Image 1: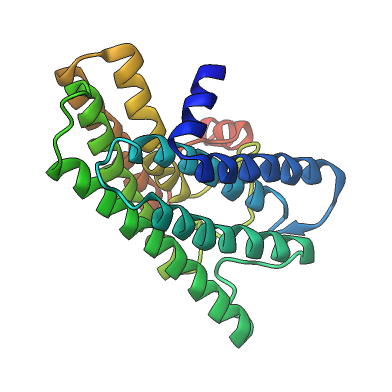
Image 2 (image 1 turned 30 degrees about the vertical axis):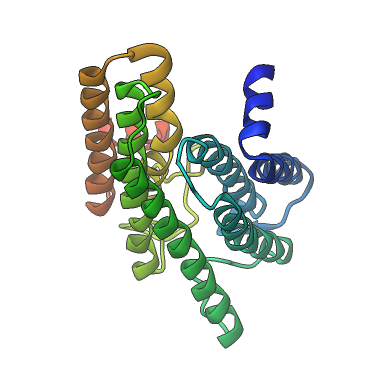
Length: 264
């Protein structure tokens, strides 16, 4: 682990420290969920900034690691694009959490509508920039990288981009719950609905292909065909959870709901 952190810092010191800031922020936000009672949609308001900060930490470190392989890549421009765009999202979400107000889907005032649109734009720009990085992994040669690892990076970026844009499924509906209202019963920490469809699950699975596929391919599979197979299974899982969510069905059911269905 120490070697990984040292190498990551050498590869991209800027994103290394930015990811570290996001990690520390996520820990602070998680601590606030235990020490404050401010709620949004019947859920502690600080869970949302925790999830966004931690996700940004994972994204920043993953991209810092992968972009190092790209020849003649303008890492400075990429770094500051990520810092500014995703930093804006985290700060705004945290500010709204402190007020006990919505950040996403909040169209209650012209200012909140504009800020919500700016968040959507920030996420879109980051996704497009990441897609560009993915293209570079296809058009350049990487003779020093194992073929299975290279394909894992390619597949992970493709899946990330597709399911990042899947966020517009929720944005267009102004809700992350299908078949019911936001704020119902959810699983611990992530708060995915246990009663209705929740597109956030597919969003989560797809975006974190960026960490899962390359790690499994490099350390466990070590085989190109196995990496292809894993990538197919992974994307099918993400698609399945999305289809189920769009049908209004929960992926995880609470014990109360399961017992209710048994007694029908």
